[in-house]
Each structure stands twice: as C-alpha cells, then as structure tokens.
Length: 249
Ligand SMILES: NC(=O)c1ccc[n+]([C@@H]2O[C@H](COP(=O)([O-])OP(=O)(O)OC[C@H]3O[C@@H](n4cnc5c(N)ncnc54)[C@H](O)[C@@H]3O)[C@@H](O)[C@H]2O)c1
Image (cartoon, rainbow, N blue to C red; front, side, top):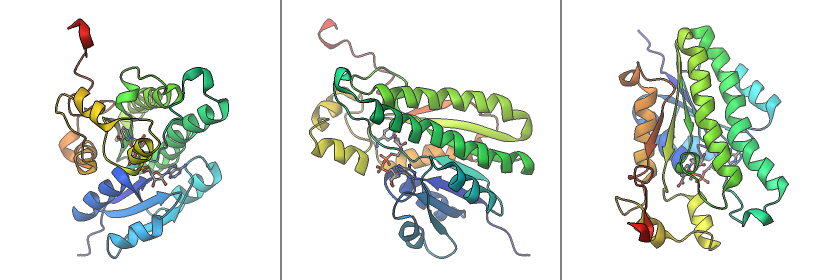
C-alpha cells in the first residue's frame, strides 16, 4: 500500500531556524513545503526529491490564500518567517518600521494560521507551531515592535488553541533565546548587539543552535504532545528563568 507522507509548511524556511526545521521534518519522513521571500526553491531542492519551495510574502493575503488553497493536505504549519526590529532608541523609531515588524510577525502568522487552519479544521487534525521569542516574554529595550509582535504571537497562540481545540487542531509556540542565524549575524554586523554580553547574560552561557529549536518545534507538532495546546515553550538556554539582579544581587 502506498503511504502518503504527512505535510509540513515552513514559512521563512530558506534560512536559519526555518531551514533547520525543514531539514528535521524532511529527515523524519515529512513532505516539506518551504514558503519564503527568497531562496525557497533552492532550499527545498537541498532537502532532496519530493519537497517544494514557493516564493511567498506572508503579509500578501491573496498569495497566502492561493498557496493554502492549492495544498492537497496540510498536517503541520510552522509560522517562522520573521525580521528584526530597528533596535534604535524608541524616540527615534519610525512608524513605518514599527508597522512592518508587526505586519510580518503578527499579521503574517495570523494569515497563514487562518488559511491553513481552515484546511486543518476540515481534516479534523493538524498542528501549528508559531515562533515567539524571549522578547515576547520579558521587556527588552529598543524592541517595541518586535517584543509586542512576539507577545502578540504568544497570545494569538492561546486564543487560536482555545478556539480550535475541539476541531482536532493544536496551536503552540516556541520562544527562543538568541540563536546563531542570519537575523542575529546582521544585528552583530551592524553593532546592534554584543554576543559576549549576551553569552554572559544567558545561564547556559551560550547561543542556541537552530537545530535545538527545530527539535522543540518537532516535539510540539508531534503526537507526543497530543494533550498540549496553547503553550509557549521557552527554548532559551535559561534566559527567561533568570531574573538578572545585576549589581543588586
Ligand atoms: N535567531 C534568533 O535568535 C531568534 C530568537 C527568537 C526568535 N526568533 C524568531 O525565529 C524566526 C526565525 O528567525 P531566524 O533567526 O531563523 O531568521 P533568519 O533571518 O535567519 O530567517 C528568516 C527567514 O524568514 C524569511 N522572511 C522574512 N520576511 C518574510 C516574509 N514577509 N515572508 C516570507 N518569508 C519571510 C527570510 O527571507 C528568511 O529566510 C523569526 O520569527 C524570529 O523572530 C529568532
């Protein structure tokens, strides 16, 4: 009998955490669909035969609807596409960047969840994993849009989970700490973050590998997490658990 492979759609799957997630699901028997602004076709080819890549802007509503309605089935959606904040002092932050960051992280994740969730509800099964961040858990300076978007993603996760639990659709999130990806490398190159200072702040004293975040996404999407919905799982090497006292300790 020909077994149909389960299908995972990873937004922003051409690079970083999304690429590691796509590779993990491919290695464990999933058919992977990568949707990214750039490099999606090449990233899918690199996974081997049977996978596909689509150029997609997650904020483009007609394009998101077209991609989702063209899918034969969808078992897992990983809402991973994302961009950095301006990291400027808040009094210098422009509204255009603020709106853009909210749009990609929050509206983009909503559109993808709405359109894939529609299909999952009809199938009466499915799992969605959203990418939140430590910036959505604790207040970090100069990240108004990014932090608000990621906290919004965590609350949207709970809201969708509560609504769709009876339809067989689970919705969870991961909240990573700093991982070594293009997004973080760009901030280092621009002098916006200091990796040594970050490592000093992290209880485990290190950055996180994208593959470690992919494993947490895999777990939340898998039957091993069948009773888990609406949670945001920190994958942050201890960052959010540690109430840094600074000199006051
Ligand atoms: N790297 C970290 O330390 C870290 C920490 C916490 C959360 N996150 C979150 O994890 C996710 C992935 O981050 P990363 O570090 O792997 O980033 P990355 O820059 O390495 O990769 C992000 C991918 O998203 C794609 N993308 C950006 N905007 C898009 C859009 N509008 N439509 C479709 N694709 C788009 C990019 O082309 C890129 O391939 C993001 O949501 C990010 O906010 C990252």
